[in-house]
Amino acid sequence: MLTGKWMLKLTMIGVLVFGLSYPAMAFLENKFEKEVEKEAGAVKLVREVQRGGYDLVSTAELKKWKDSGKDMVVVDTMPYEDSYKKMHVPGAVQFLFPIPDMDAWDTKETGGKTQDDFIQLLGSDKDKTIVVYCGFVKCTRSHNGAAWAVKLGYKNVFRYSGGVFAWKGAKYPLEKVE
Image 1 (cartoon, rainbow, N blue to C red):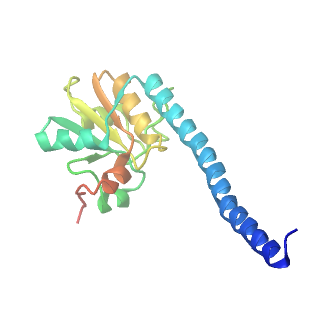
Image 2: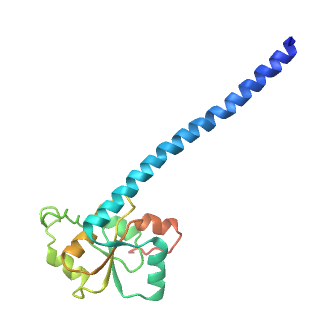
Image 3: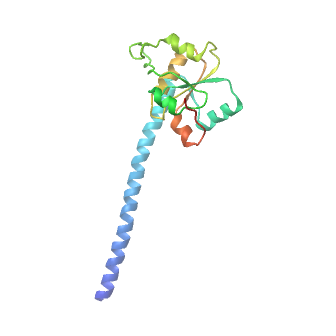
């Protein structure tokens, strides 16, 4: 038979084991829930790429392209002029207004900007590499821009899905407009 002293020790060990394992169980459950969110985001991105007919470029790849002097147009589609002024991928040009979904170009949605304005920004060389980005992976502005570039006949179109947040997260230099 256990004495009161041993009962107390066993109770304390049980409380300690349960107390330490409960947060671990909660962490594991949260980890699994986060994986569902990651999966949903990954599947959404892949389906956008398939629907848009463009390719993806990673942060490291884009940095390598820039460092090598690759001839390309990098388009920032961040929604506010101030965001571009504060930080953008070096050499990027800004298309400030939202690029419409694929159905039809609607100048009411783009602040009067036309398809021709977008083509002028991208240039006349349909074989030139075009890279379109926004802020982060979930942003669909980069998808719309890349998909429209493909629709307008550009052949080497990439979406930089990580956007300016991933560029900054990789600690690569940013440009700003003074």
